[in-house]
Image 1: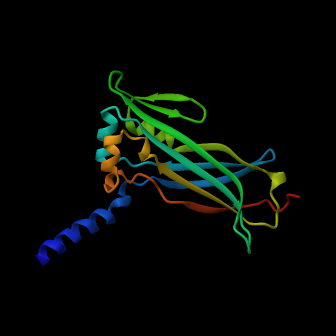
Image 2 (image 1 turned 60 degrees about the horizontal axis):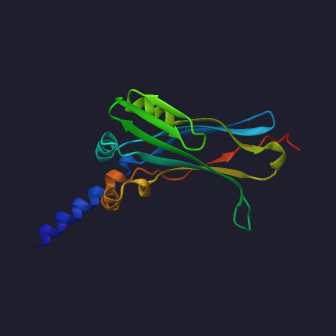
Image 3 (image 1 turned 90 degrees about the vertical axis):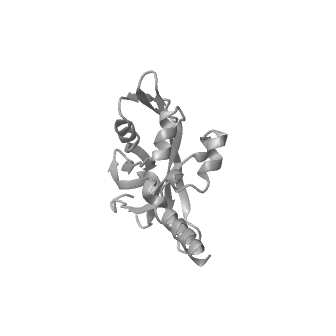
Length: 188
């Protein structure tokens, strides 16, 4: 009986230890200052598990949203939120066309791709996202930018949602990634 319990615990541990194998990640992010604004450029990476690929191939659309926050750091209060922005993407496979479709839900733009990797690459690049006007930035304050990639498992069909809860192959969301906004000290 003890062997059975130890074996079960080992299997559970290995499942949870590998849970982040399919988590989306922020690979690189930086800001630039031009024309009176700070802009965000980021490279993301999405990993699909075999089960999520199978669902996609069977016509189930997959949704992610990328949350971007800009906070002013304060010593004695909670950080002041200067910006909250969410980019939302839908990834879908069309069997008749043998094409992957990425839809930017914010802009309505749709792009078709012949391979899954090309479709994921399209979702992985953020360029020129305006963060804040330089007039709203105080040079002697610290600002933190945070990005999180969230897989929207509640958008899956209901029968699939019950399987997702404890299955590490559906843990496709990433953790928060933080870095400081380098404020140009010459700003008024």
